[in-house]
Image 1 (cartoon, rainbow, N blue to C red):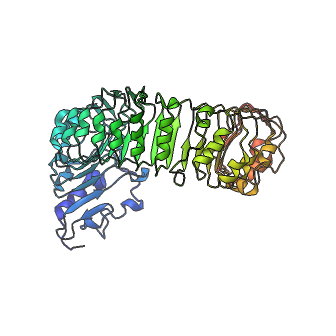
Image 2: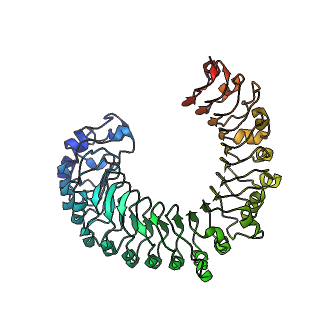
Image 3: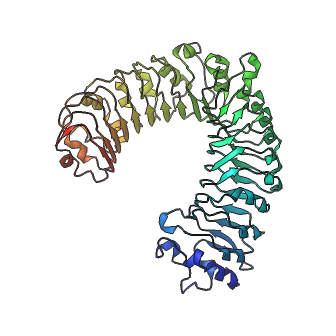
Length: 530
């Protein structure tokens, strides 16, 4: 560190907002260097302050309120305008309630990076001020209360590379003038429920975008085929809108795309008339994550499943609420996935699988799964022994909301299992029988168990829970227990959530749980405890 220190800039940092202003935790380590006798004149030694080694000018302020005790409150003080050489300012997660972006920040001509996300900003003129920041390259105003329409002033912001306005209250349409942000690499306008209109096709004129997130808005119309021009795009999320029309085959040009998310997009459909246009999906050879929900035509298009199978680098595949059935997969018995070694997450929630055929099919897709969800199908079982014996990496299994009556005893052989959800099925076995199906290694690994909304009965042995040392969540609610609650639950030192409501348990619950020091949530309503 050079001995040259700009005393005027250090004085600016000592004003009421930055140093002596209202904040939480004056004595915590994060603020101990600010204005201390040792560093009183050398603000370059203060926490979060960075200076140029040659000139001594303050060039970076990194003061996020990541923890409540570090948060600044009030208004952003005008004394910051003295920091004319500032290039980086991060005041995110502080509390500047009902404030706007101070105009004086626009006078910091060297400022390139401005992060004010989660600061409580809500001034009505925030969007009108953006045109003043033509020198910025990075702006994050997400998780605030920024309202109004995105204005045409954006046409002057040709240097911007990162724009995040997500989780605000923007309204109106996305302006076509966004095409003038010629250096833009990251665009996130998600979670603005009053953002309406069509996706402007002019976005396809941008050259640099790598990340585009327009999810959870109220966008309408077709996906512009011009988006296929974004050759550098790696992430595209259009989920939770009301889009319509046919998915453009030009998306197959996005050979660098790694994440394609199309969940609940409206009435999007596959082009079923031109089979050659199904093949665009297999061109996305960089794709690692694919999410499709409620896409019309996927049920009847074997070609689409075959195109997905060709993707070589896929890690996460979600195909939910598409009425996929046993008949569909039985017609493709030898379908091999090129990504079988990399695929780790598979979500087939909300389809119409019934028999054990789906488990054999999944084994054929990838035996290396870590996460598997077959929630909300019509599964009756049984779960084959081969599935349990070959799934050597499975950690999270969700079979909730099916019609399983049993036949899952082999699941207890999966020693890697951390989470098991069997809620809302037709289980009627005794709980002690269910717990006994778990091998010693599975009992040690299991952390999350949901058996709620079944017909499980039986007397629980006093020590039946003792082997489940890693269990932190257990939901046994809405079953048909009617005996004393086992004392062994009190030995589960990491148990945080215990839900027992709507049963007939008896006994002295609080005596049983007096050793459960980690317990944070207990719901034992509508039982017979005393």
